[in-house]
Image (cartoon, rainbow, N blue to C red; front, side, top):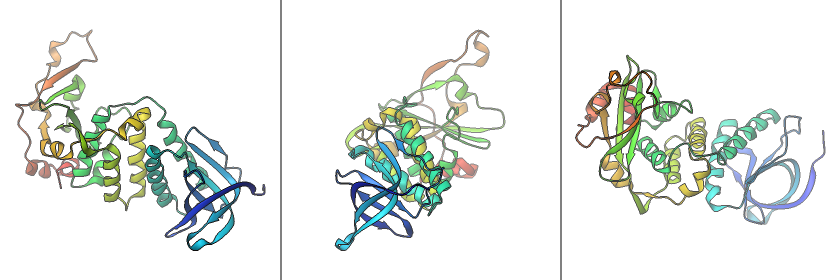
Length: 317
């Protein structure tokens, strides 16, 4: 087993309640870090250097604790770059992973690092959806009666046809940046499989200087599901994979929560004007079109609640 190596690094730290192995701190440059003590150095543990993340094992460093106490400790070090936009993402991810993994063995720490690295790498990939679309989905979760049920159904697979998919129930969220409810659909989205219940959640999403960012909604949802650290990590993972390189823009893009909340309308898929499948030549596929649904009546909340399951979970609490 290799001996710890000194780096001359120094951190100001606080203890994480209930997690004896972990310290939360900042380096001299202000970059946030998590220091993990008492982890055996095994072959599972490897150093990682990414643009905004580094992981080192067997590091001997100085720590300054509350009260002026200073110690020299041997740790595994997980540190984010000194980037204000990224700090919140890092701290939320580490909070969820720490709750999920607890005081880790070498193998468990390697698994934790793998999860973290995958998520940071996702932030360098192309976006899968607009910030506006993701914000609308997050608001539906935040407003719902059961955020846990909604998160469990949210983008179960990266290429899902619908935003929320649970058994025989589906919900597709559509946003509009104007007061005119015009939404883009793939024809297949309005042709759900036989035996399924599917609704469209339509909402108006307007930019607002005093509004909320996607990160604000993520923090709000995280507070609602703190008993489920696995879902906290899943929430961050879906956001990272959806936004990709647009994560930095999302940190400064705000939308009007009140306008969006008051505009939420659930629509029966059968009431939305569409293209009859039989009207298309066999050689035509991958059809996309825009529909104005202003005149489509909304489904009463009581009816959604009576459906139970995913539909009831999406009713505003």
